[in-house]
Amino acid sequence: MQKFPQLELIHAPTRLSIVALLAATESAEFKFIRDSVGLSDSALSKQLTTLEEAGYVEIRKGFVGKRPRTTARLNSVGRAAFEQHVAALQEIVARTGTSVL
Image (cartoon, rainbow, N blue to C red; front, side):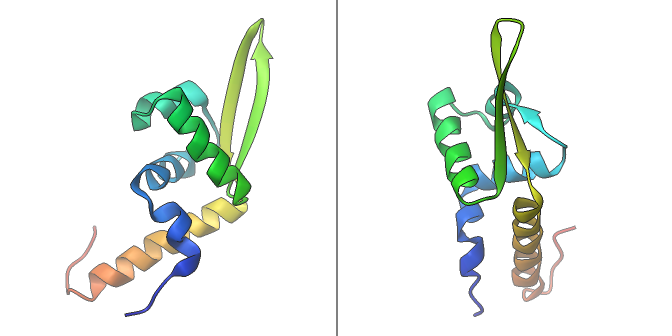
């Protein structure tokens, strides 16, 4: 069976959920990601940091008025990794003679 070591980082279900969400949009606010994926603030922060350190996600921190706002964006490296991951999953599923669609 062919291995895909470069995709291990986003294989974890939580990170895959975050990357899939970000792949569907230009960027997303921290609160939206947190609520969509169902994580605590600290757990999401840790996962986003991991993805940022891998070079997949860009994090921007700023303020709207006096309120802090954090947004995350999947960059081109992250988008390519996600697309490769989806292709790898499709390849694995295709071996069974079924389709993911």
